[in-house]
Length: 136
Image 1 (cartoon, helix red, strand yellow):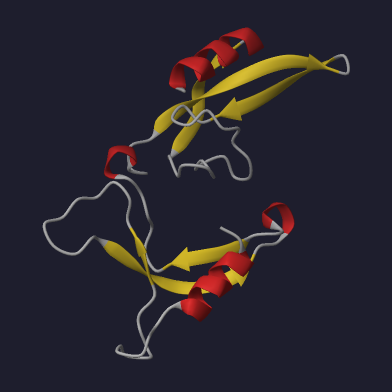
Image 2 (tube, one colour; image 1 turned 180 degrees about the horizontal axis):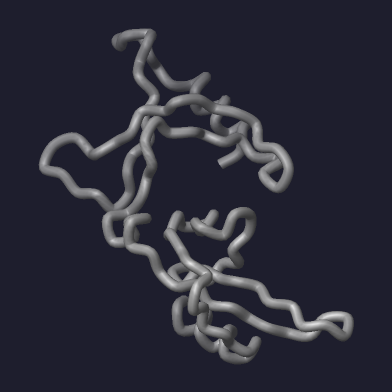
């Protein structure tokens, strides 16, 4: 979804019969309920900077996570080593979604998994591609 898609949706929704001060919430994926779906209120919305440039960021009031991937369940990252410009380069990846860890490298920016670099399994590029194909 793009910002223009969001604006169009908000402009075309009918709020006639509802309170004009509706709460804005985010559904929590992977959580089940017999009644209304679990949700978390939105704290604020802002424009991304640096590597998040070009994104509209929505900050929830509470952390969001899937019950099967709770951030409390720390997992070991894995590392890929390769030679670049005559030096060895190591990049760490999330064990859940296989995405490269960037920034602080404590949480995966893609899936939110809490990771540790201690004891990270080192893979060759071939092993990584095989592992990623199996995950998909």
